[in-house]
Image (cartoon, rainbow over all chains, first blue to last red; front, side):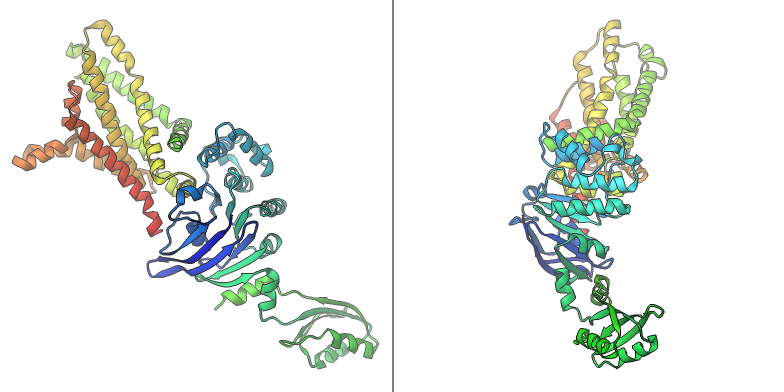
Length: 309
Length: 242
């Protein structure tokens, strides 16, 4: 089921939390939705899940408007809010059954769906407990389970790995990637490595507007970053190597990474590439080049460039 | 329809799980039993008649205080913890959530009243009872309860603090329970009649005397619908205001 956001605007008084944004998410796509705090991520999620009404624009899920046809659309959506609100006094199984029934699963099928969720989300050892007795990581898993129990076509996950330990994070990311094969997933997060690990496409929102939309590769290509290498040259005097590298015309900045090991970080001038020049320099001076590793522009830097203004 | 019952069941389980239900049941039955059978000016043995009028009066007042204690958590707590937000994104309408909670509170009150049926049996064994009057009395209590539940539900929908919900419900309820009556007493003519009509006790008394007049039904139905409607409006408001 695909999602189409059309010219969405939401104002809180004078402040435009979401400012005329439009984008699409295709079936089977996992979209990473990034942005600084207050950018409008959670507001957008709340509008998609019909918790809030927009002031302008609409959201279409599977062709149906979330505003006009809310009742028929909602059962196709699974939502894990940022705060993961849960009924503390309810036992896990009761809570998941409640969610399942509410989302339209028939009474006969509920126990097996609950068992399936317990299995997939790894809550088997805790399933006899009340939600209030669980640690944060397990509560997060219960939140995920309630979002998935009715097997929705669309999953809206707001910070799904928040509070999880490194092992759990890997598991949940794996789970999301698996789900993403058939379902349409929007993943809101601050954690940039998570976006790279899990998402097919990235959307960056800042101050209510979309400032980037594309795959991680595209974003890197489009950003104004200079080519950067880590170089290790054996033999030769560190300072001499430093001077020589600096004298190459296409190189902008040279930095010592480790004087003893002759490791440098070298950045080309904007728009230039220096691979051949470095190699030829080493050949000329009879230096042995043992490392020439490109340093990928970090997503963090792209994010910073787009959202700091 | 089905979704209303799912909400009701969950709410009732929660109220019983938290022991609030047991406390209130014991208190309600304790009060009722004490003042109906043991002591006080309405005590059956003092009055000397095989009637439950005294019990109905006591129950009326104890329900007035106990119902806000039940309704205060229904919406305020969910708003505070954020579970209401999640609930409303599921395949259920705002209205059905409200009705489900309303029914849960009403069922609890009915359970409490059901526990007083032994009074009827006991009374029947010691005197000649007017069964029609007694049935009407219970109907009256259910209608009064439903009215106060809907008021309490509205009070719970406008705040995230349970204590504020409780006090607001009592405050609004006082108008219907006493204040209109007082104002009717000091006003004359049309104004006096209006206050008299708004006064809940009048309608309750007229039903518990054994006559179910459409006027009274309309009165209670109006309060019930108004309370539920305003509660729904209150939680739907978030959609516009955020």
